[in-house]
Amino acid sequence: MVMNPGHSAARRHDRAESPADVLWMQNGVIFWRRLSFVRAGRTAQGGRELIVVDAGVCPCYRINTYRLTDAFNVKKFQGEIKPLTSLRFFAAMAVVFFHFGASAAERAGFPGFMVSILKHGYLGVSFFFVLSGFILVVAYDGRLGTRERRYDFFLSRLARIFPVYILALALSIPFTNPLWIESVIFAPLLLQSWTLPASNLGGALNMPSWTLSIELFFYVFFAVFFVRLSRLPTIVLGILATCMAAVIILADVAVVHPGIQLDGWIRFIPLPVFRLPEFLLGVLSALLVSRLSIASKPKGMDTLFFCVVALVLVTLAEGSLASRLMPVACAVLIVAAALSTGPVLRIFSNPVLVFLGGASYAAYLLQMSVNGVFDALFGDNFASRIAMPVVLIALSCVVYKWVEEPARRYIKGIKFSHVPREA
Image 1 (cartoon, rainbow, N blue to C red):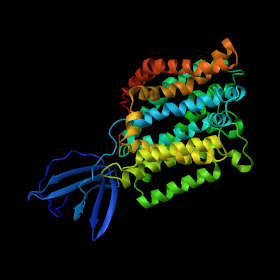
Image 2 (cartoon, one colour):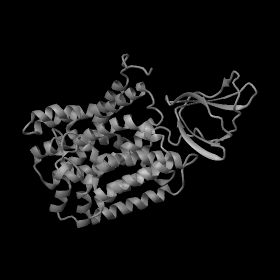
Image 3 (cartoon, rainbow, N blue to C red):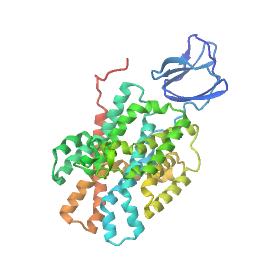
Image 4 (cartoon, helix red, strand yellow):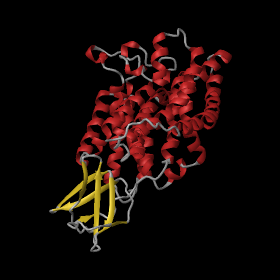
């Protein structure tokens, strides 16, 4: 696209305002910039020009440039990335079988490698943290530049997590003994993991909800810092992603959870900070994907996906390096699944798997209550451990269709007229 700069005559615009990644060459140097609004039009003399409004940094300016790439406004992902939705189901089930299947399998004499895989099911949480960062970038890149849009972001996120979360808290009360006043205060506000690890409030009321408290921290971080992060040069993003991977591997952050014994000064740091590298790895992975493959999806993603799955299974079966490598492997799996154009796309776009992926959030939060009912009725035995996940999946599908989705649509439809506008 060749620009004809320098004309100030009246213009006829032929493209609506939209976010864009813009590449341009000036004085022999190629520049990249994430621009909030782009209007392409024609000058009175018929030349092409580009008018830019850049999120308050420069209210309005014209790029005096020699050339822009034709792919400057390509959107890599359109709508839901179905393979990623489907993969959520497997991650949630990994956590469920970690809680309620590993010990039963060990008592039943299952092979050691199978027991090891089940015992590492807690690493499904790492998948959720990395996936959260990736999906937020895909969904909100270029959409957080104003105060109104940040309000919309938080409303959408709360609509996503709170309906089933409140239901799960209510159902968990009969199985909570003793019922501490601190739990009643912190848990409904999703602040239980924002306390010191030594407080043991992370698993208040409904134990798996500690991860939702950390997700809320991630949402705040994303709303505050993402616009600045997205403007960094690609090389800086790559360095940051490498640093996050190194921190995850060296510090073994995937094992940090409520109740872990932290020594020294580190025990005074709230828990969400420890899991931030996983979330940032997802954010940076999505930004790098959008930068490094602008025009088309690269080939070989399906092969990469299946190779990493095989590596993950071997690592989980062996056990010693699983927690260190899993978050980084999750980032690779997510990127490969998102960019797939072959078997991975076809398999994990199956409507049944996509629906189960949608219901996985309810399954994750309701697992303790359903298990409590099974323990009360049938006791802790192998048969109940087999039947419980089946009932949990069925119940989560009902909750997803008849509670979660209607409540989400209702909350997202709420409009706040008092939301302050940008000056």
